[in-house]
Image (cartoon, rainbow, N blue to C red):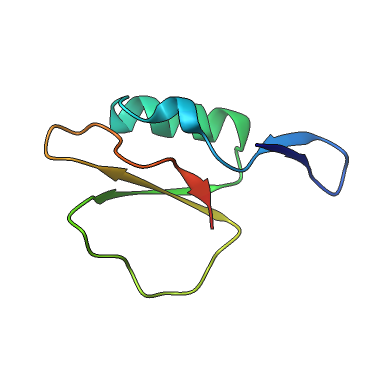
Amino acid sequence: MPIRDTFGVQVNREWMELVGKTAEEAKAVVEKGNPDIRVEILPDDGTLPSDAMDEDRVRIYVNGAGKVTRVPTIG
């Protein structure tokens, strides 16, 4: 879902099209559109990190085959 940043530039907040892609492919797409964002790649093992939302971070959850299993979202 694209939004506009404080300078009026359109940026994505989520990437539905990345589900099923490899972690590396997904990370490259997120960083290309949002170069200042921090990307974390985590195993999708059912546990969720308990830290607070972070508008400067995107988490990419992957299965044992390294494929994205959830829609990567800022926060």
